[in-house]
Length: 172
Image (tube, rainbow, N blue to C red; front, side, top):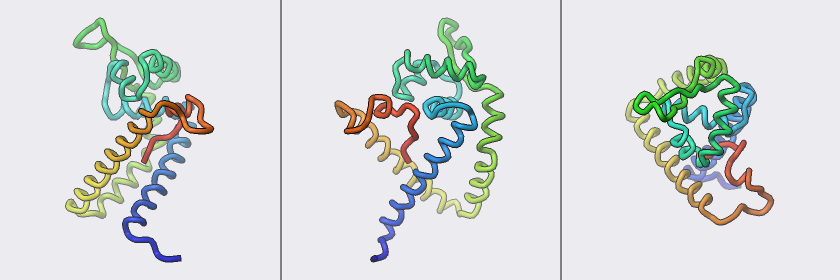
């Protein structure tokens, strides 16, 4: 068998990384006692900070009714709280709790530290290239996911829950 080209090796590496991230997502969801959709909501809230439920619904690609169900589960588990929006008390914002921070440290703390150590081995110039590559791959992946999502129906063997990504992993 011929050795794959460097671009082929990079593409293969991305696929392998995606598989490992998918495996990590499931293991983490199991440790949190949540499904993968709820984990995505927590991830978005952790990165974006407090959000209005409508903003979270948009980022998840859900209806406001669908996100209410997710928030109800997360609130019952103790991972989020809803509070009045300081700018408009008629609205609510959703934020993560101390229980989320503690579980995040338990589940992801060692990975974050190991990744920080790994990144320290690269020069700033190398990190700029890596960041650019990751940003561009994320953009290409998001555009492809959007294109797939805009098609009329699911492919063979998929029901609507699978098509909309509930309890499924994220793209690379």
